Image (tube, rainbow, N blue to C red; front, side, top):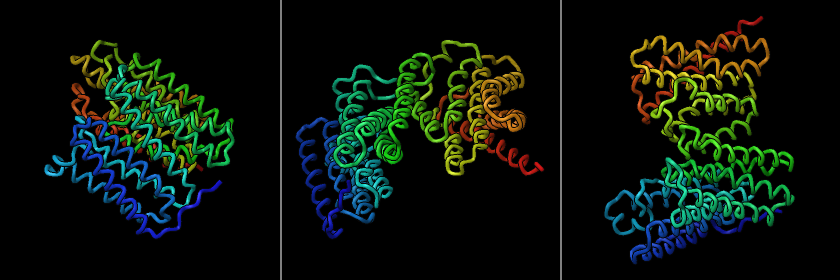
Amino acid sequence: MTIASAAIHPWIGVAVILGAFVLLFAGVAVYARAGGPPEITRKLVHAGSGILTLAFPFLFRDAWPVLLLTGASAALIAAIKFMPALRRRFGGAVSGVDRSTLGELYFPVSVALVFWLTRGAHPLLFVIPILVLTLADATCALVGGRYGTIRYEGASKSLEGSIAFVVVAFFCIHVPLLLWTDLGRAETLLISSTLALLVMLLEGSAWRGLDNLFIPIGGYFLLRAYVTFDAPQLAARLAVTLTLVASIVVMRRRTTLEDDSLVAGAFLCYIAWAIMGWRWLVAPIVVFVGYKWLSPPTPDNSRRMHDVPAVLSVWAAALAWLTLAHGTHDDALLLPYTIVFASHLAIFGLSRLAYQFRDRSLTVLFSRAVAASWIIVMVPFVVTTSPGASDIAAAVSIVAIALGAAAFVGVCDIRDAPQTTRRWVYQAGAAGIASLASWLILVAVRRSWP
């Protein structure tokens, strides 16, 4: 079933939307000045703006009116947020919460990006992600703030808020698909369940307002893929998603990852599996399970201290190789992808050992960490790879892992590497260098083959 766009002049549509936005901001500003709670006023703007943007695919065929409206909205929000005079007068309606966030600015950016991605496509590809962001995210914040008692470590979010998010997101997806598409009931139910859970993982792992960017963009790409799958394929994805959610519950007290970073890691594992298959899950899982084996456990190194930036550091170069492999259909890129995780494991192990055993030779600790990382990560790789390729990978990987660890030692004090953004940037760069070196060596070996 198709949904037609209204045939009106773009400037008329712009005028209508602008007028509605002015009324919305004026009403919420009055409410805020009358003493309305900051979180409520902010969510009123969030929900009202989202509902208005749902009309975009029905009013506009071209992207420029939407870019104009979202650009003007972003400029207005930035002015209110960062200009003291405007902030004193209207700030309660936009950014009246205590925590530091740029979520209000990310919202119009995400609307513009999703509209640009969906131009010419079925309107529901735009409507559903924005509807989830508008209603589910707002409900999550309000329920979590009012009733949340089980808080995530490393985040301001709660289990109660996440449950509310899943329930509302399910209906935001299920009802439009059921009413305005030709999908079967089983497919609609499976898509709604899986997508609601996955977007909840995105929301739970986002920080500083980035959920306003992650939810609609991630929701769009997932929805676009899912509507092409049949019921058995969708059932498999739901099973994997439920397994990941169960793993989060089981592992949250058995890892040094904070709750939001554990959720982020689980979502990235799902992406790796969904895009390239189970073999691309092996490296991140063995690193997650094996990194605690690299040094004797102590109260200091066993506490939950790794946040979302730490997870993103581990995955940064891996996501680049994953994307390249998906685009080129080159399974050989599994080697540099795996080297990324092996290098991170070596760096984690070396930093733990160097901090714990300050009187021991750094050369000995370096060799121990590199060898242990190679065994933990590369042995499963070799086992699942063809014999000829595995021999080359085994030789290349040990050199690449050592190079990555050495690159990190060259820029950081390995005996005292604090959990800072600079450390994670350096570590991501070192692992990226190691993986690139492994790929260049592999390319050279390939060219030398007869």
